[in-house]
Length: 149
Image (tube, rainbow, N blue to C red):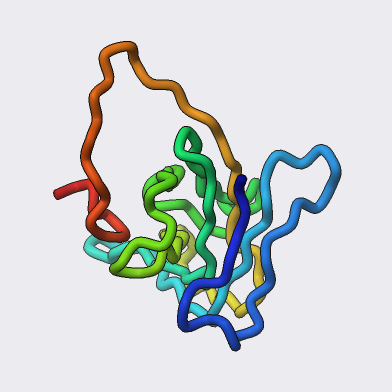
């Protein structure tokens, strides 16, 4: 019904599938798929996308949330979009196979180095509700940011 898979192009890169660390944890810990440098924030700098090498599948009435770790801000990491919401139809899309990324700003006065395998965030799966007269019929035609069009 829901789970994680490795995206195309990362099959031989030693990607670990996410796990919950305790029996009562709500979230799955997500690791960086590659070494990444996050530059110190200044005006005009764009958020840094950290690849996970993962895609996630869930039921049609579910989505998953990308969340910062509680230790993230202490380490200078602030998610550019506060949280990320990833819809069920993002899975396996044509443009990127459903590969989800975390996007961060670095609030420290020096660059932050993320190493492959560092836990960079968490994923929580959720159900959602629709209103009585909802008639959405659109079909996803792309990957990251495609519903902005």
